[in-house]
Amino acid sequence: MEEYQECNIMILLDGKKVALDVRNEISDQVSLLLKNGHKRPHLAAILVGNDGASQTYVNAKVKACKEVNFQSTLLRLDENITESDLLAEVERINDDSAIDGLIVQLPLPDHIDEKKVTQSISPSKDVDGFHPVNIGKMVLNLPSYVPATPAGIIEILRRYNINCSGKHCVVIGRSHIVGSPMSILMAKNSNPGNCTVTLVHSKTKRLHEITKMADILIVAIGKKNFVNEDMIKDGVCIIDVGINRVKSDKTKSGWKLIGDVDFDAVKNKCSYITPVPGGVGPMTIAMLLNNTLNSAKKEIY
Ligand code: NDP
Image (tube, rainbow, N blue to C red; front, side, top):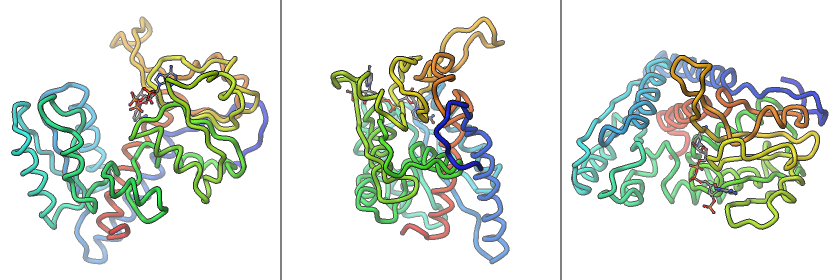
């Protein structure tokens, strides 16, 4: 792909296409593993309860496994399951050498301590990259599973040859799954990386002044159309992580997804931008598959 040029001809960062490339590469790797007598990578997912959005996300992950020829196991548990029974299931999968990766779909019902469950997953199977051991290793630049959404953003920047070195990257949002790990990855001595990073959040004062200094702006707050043309400088590269569902009379379902960035307002000012949908979203599952492949290949642990 083209070398990143700072100009005002906006280029869409096509996450859908990059995700497809990543998945095809994973499929090829699976074929190679099988050819060499290894087993298929195996991802297990635990879904507790009947939350509609969670079911959709888990089903998409199971479907993606099939598409790259992974084995998958979906364990559906009753929403009233006790915390100790859920922990026992996690332990059972931790001990099952046929399973390479385990994800527990969040959120969990209120009576279950999410932190406790996340931390009970063996770090060597934690392909979501949420375990403190994996977060710590990521910070220390040791091999680890990197949370899928930030890993997907890095992959987009890498494949579009976006020159990040020495640039000012502003990350809006400090969640454990997106904003915080993103800020760490962008500051690393690596490519993509080597940015000067500012992490801002809801308590940040004069946010507009800071975002206007960004060469690369990564937005993960969950507020529709939050970033507008007055908050950015010419030529900025924008990564819009937000997924917000809004009513629409133009779609069959009556709903559509929009990002945290007002796309139409900024499109003539930025050099690169991820669309919503079709930008960061498709990369998240692709990188989860990639983490699972790395687990099967024993590349991390
Ligand atoms: P969280 O709700 O966990 O975190 C939101 C962050 O945004 C918080 O740090 C919060 O600050 C900050 N924030 C909220 N309002 C403002 C504001 N007005 N100004 C500055 N900062 C603000 O969200 P997530 O990180 O989980 O998700 C963010 C968005 O990304 C959501 O739309 C989500 O759906 C989407 N998402 C998309 C994924 C994908 O695959 N594309 C994957 C994961 C998430 P504070 O800490 O001070 O409260």
